[in-house]
Length: 232
Image 1 (cartoon, rainbow, N blue to C red):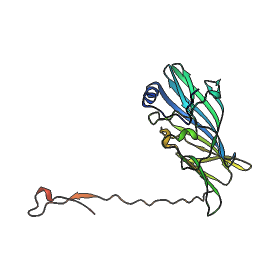
Image 2: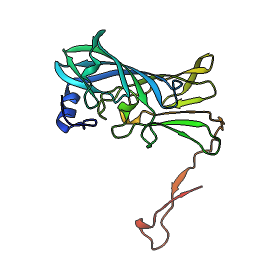
Image 3: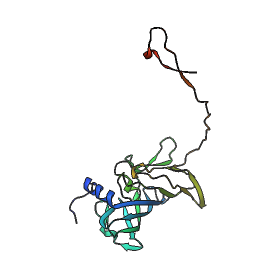
Image 4: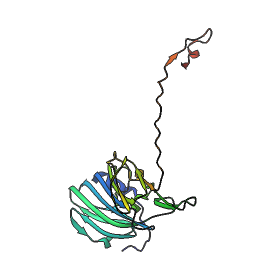
């Protein structure tokens, strides 16, 4: 067990090793934002192919409940400095990570704040740098891109938006369920989410005819450098 504290920083050698060994097929992320004002539930399923390698998946939870690899449970107690070790054989794999995560108020991760104007809570995601694992488990480096599908449970009066169009998939008493994605392949730090009691307004942009351009003929004494583009 390391005596160091805080999440470990990814080294260049570690990133190069994973980039060579891993190909991420997809992320499926389930978030329940209705649990509490301080925490939310996060369940991530990652499907990927790997070379024969010992590596790790990043996750920064309040509580790590369960981890599995190809259906076999792993010990959550192996979590150290934001990493769960994975011993991978060559081939296709699926890992599932279930955790309770903390809402943050420092502008990173899943940030939750109260608007003093209306006294209501609003949430937005900022996964830049190394904040993504505080929202969902992932192989957190920008060259391991993958499509994301999200399922979000939120209070019934909230709207949810993200990297793909959000669709309401059902209601259950005081909550609504939303589905998003799959997205195009994204780096982990591009993944975001916005949720809260927003008022939604749509506006259709008007189309303008494309402007045509032509080259003006050079005037007397201007030579070839006198040409310029004009539009009408």
